[in-house]
Length: 621
Ligand SMILES: Nc1nc2c(ncn2[C@@H]2O[C@H](COP(=O)(O)OP(=O)(O)OP(=O)(O)O)[C@@H](O)[C@H]2O)c(=O)[nH]1
Image: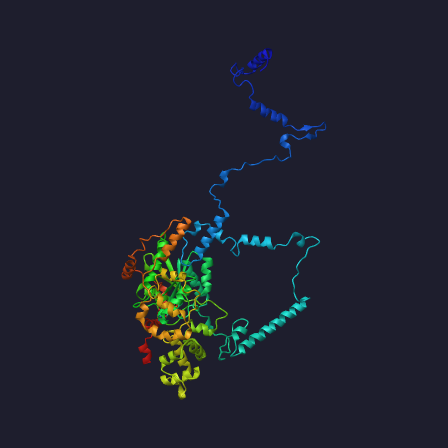
């Protein structure tokens, strides 16, 4: 490093200090400091702070500087891998197409968790954070209006000026409430339900009821029953909502539909219009058409020996099971109002009595599993009644929710029965005529049947119960006329109907009868058509239709999904499998607790024998 002399003296010095010449650095490799080393040394040299004489820092060292250096991280495309960019137009058309599919009850979206569903729901969610933020952005007041000298704060309008006034006010309103309650309880013959502030009291047109609503009208609403319902819904992949064909809207649980739509949209909900044998073919057809707008609907007649719609239902369930081919089995829950025939449908599907059936509501008390075939389990559920403030006890009774034996003053409901039925049907059923009001009708009937109390008084109560039972069990023909559909002739409706393979054959004739469905005219045809069971059989074919397959295929194609659908499985061997397993009799998996239901065994047997009334029978009575 140094000149010759210096170097020589260094050598001597180091040679003296070190052990021999081995450690002596010589010019050449590693002799000079490298540029890197020099830079580091300079940094240390520069790094010192400059101080004045007093030792104060006059210029901070570079590493002591408080100035934040400007730094930028270089953006990199790699950060954005795995995400896709979509144009607004493409997003709009995707949203529209998906919304259309999602709102069509006959299409099934597979693997929706692989689709960006949040893009479709964007902005429509009620509680979504985005919505909340948007709302805040729009509704928030400007800063100046909330803070500062020009702030305008909204004050609560109390309507009272002091605490004493407020206390007085609340006492007054409590008194008024009590008065109204008392009045509603005492009122009779008026619309007590409307005037009643809490919906406790009830009255009919005849003014019989002056007491609070009987407890039996809360049947099917207990916490226990609702717990059973939620258990069934939770365990089901397909939920079948059973409706009574005579009053489909009355027996429709909209709150349950809403719950499934919002809380469990991945579950498939379908309607089964049961007891179709009790209504004219055209009426059933137009109800199916009407309800199909919301959910797939099948017409059904539950009977082990002479059923209708069984093939379609089994085929539909098989299609659902093949949609979920990744699962070992699917569960199908039956829900609906009491006495609509849920257990009867299960018995019909299994072709034997696996669930207890009775013509009285509340027969099924707990949920129970029944195996239909290897891949399809059925779950029976007790009947539920959604609580409603507008339903009068009369409505509830005529839907078959309440056991007629337990009703007080049953004669008060007879006018409603007479209203819903045609006089000639009553006359034909009971062979009596010439009455002016319902009491006269009941008295005539009691005398005719010899139902007299002590002293020769007619047993009006007993006869009224009998009439109510006959009305509910289908001995007196009646039905609720279907709403006339707008554009019933349109192709769309027809197409849907055809999809499920229902009503294909008789469609043309049905339309003619539906076109002018006024209650009187339709009822007048009721008896003839109800009696003609052969005609009903021709109502539709038992092939299940390939509607769902088609639609799923469409959705898959549109959104590039793999279809889980396996047509080969839903092939023609379907029926055989169902029947094979029927014969095996291996799966009477009814819960042990189901034995609770034994107490009403006698009624069950009656029910099993129950058939729609024939013209001959009615004439005999
Ligand atoms: N005419 C006719 N009667 C039916 C039909 N389905 C069921 N029933 C009758 O309706 C009554 C009630 O049937 P269930 O199967 O016990 O009804 P449920 O819905 O299980 O009743 P809960 O046990 O109260 O929930 C029985 O008397 C059945 O015979 C049908 O398709 N046509």
